[in-house]
Image 1 (cartoon, rainbow, N blue to C red):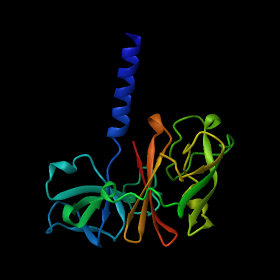
Image 2 (cartoon, rainbow, N blue to C red):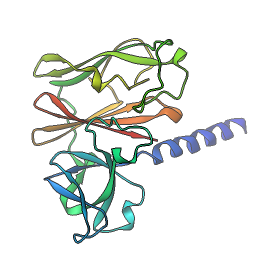
Image 3 (cartoon, helix red, strand yellow):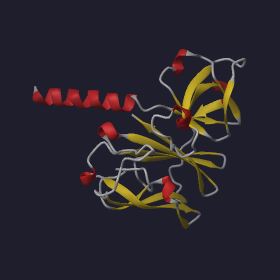
Length: 226
């Protein structure tokens, strides 16, 4: 009986966590984001080709439009409790596709994300203006990133800390953490653009990153938290 309730608790917890992860959409061309689900509505944002956004939970109530959200910052560097950091609006479904519908690249190791994982500094001040991701557990048992590399055409390129200085617990062990052969990463390719989806942390701190990469450069980092 105890095993039954343990399994039931696991399934409920799993469904709660993953039900709240939202689908990502990709703009197949520059498209306008509208305030309401109508071309006569006010335009509030321009979603550029290959830019990704999140579908909110009520998207399936409308057959022709998606209600989306994203941050104005291409790195999800929104200011906490600042409504101006976010964009909420409608886009026509005919102008976008789902990231998960793009074919996966399963054998391509010419593009690799690689992180150096270290124990988090317990003396570091974590009360920042910007949102910090994956830090629902104490710093004393948390891990952070000291450096990040992007492998492109057999060359490893150091990435600016702006891409990772707010990410915690993408892995729970010190050392090199790579996307190569890692089940926590999936890679999708559309023309010359790569979309790398990365699952990070776990439990209440679970979050997912979508990295948009063109020509060996990260052009967007979209983060979805539960």
